[in-house]
Every structure is written in structure tokens, then in C-alpha cells.
Image (tube, helix red, strand yellow):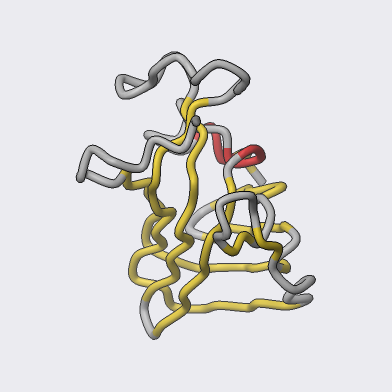
Length: 131
């Protein structure tokens, strides 16, 4: 299995530090709503606000044309963060090989067979959670 950073478009994100806010599984798709950590190499990166080490933007991890999904060990109940928002921890690991994606975190473990995975940032211009 190959680390997620080798997927096209994933190399300027840090999933291990990003917060999972919601997971939605529907026929044909799986979507993780995230507070995504961007690396300094990302074109939308900004210096974090004083007192923070990371820069976050709202986004989604989207699995498209899902043909098989196994979600086990669905994890601990969500936590409530300092802003009152629910979070399910991080995506601690994500690997892939030939359309099979394996993910683990506090929210559980997932094996997803899909045509593609992509990260999408919120286009509204808001969502800077570095404060």
C-alpha cells in the first residue's frame, strides 16, 4: 500500500493533523468533512495566527464511484472542540493501491474501493480555522 501523499493533489495537505468533522457514506460515495491542514507549499496557505502552528481550511475528502465499503470499529463518540463543534479526531493513516483506500482514525477503520479520491477546499473564502 502507498501513502496518501503520493496521490495526485494530496502532497500539500496533512491528514494526520486535520480534524474529521463528519463522515457521510451513501451509495456510490463517501465524504469526510474536514478542517484540513495545508502545508506552506499549498497555494492557499497563509501563516497561522499567533499562538497556532498550523493553517486550516474547511474542505472535504471525497471518494467517487464507490463500489465497495467496509467500515469497522466505528470508534469513540465524537469530542466537542473549543468552538463547540463536534470532531471525530484525525485520519491517522490513509494508504491506497489500485483503487483500494484504507483509512484509520478515532472514528474507526474504513476500506473503500472507489474510482478516485480527491481533496476539495471550501470555495467560499471562509473557513480559515487558524485562529
